[in-house]
Image (cartoon, rainbow, N blue to C red; front, side):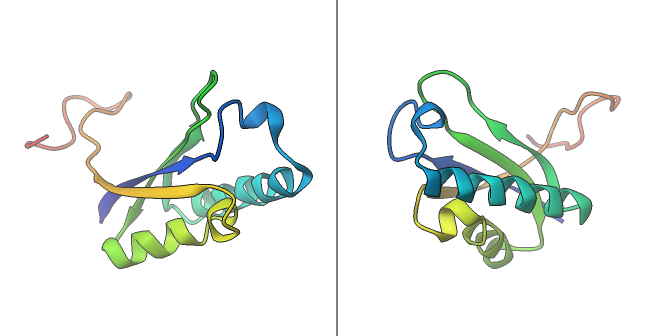
Length: 106
């Protein structure tokens, strides 16, 4: 199973502080979507960057790029066109709680 990373790129700075009701509802659904992925064993980690640029970060596992894109595209704020998603392959190399690197070729 490969790791993937996607960014949720907001349409403006200070997004968290200035969200409309529609955006707030989409991010409530996003939180639930992340919980579902976590329960399914798909999600590795997720959260926002802080400060004036509130980029969301999601690291997860998927078998291939098509499945990874489908997971990202189904995230409610992306699916509703409120933020832009940017998908990239990712490799977890170091993880707290594990002895040594997780992969031999970072």
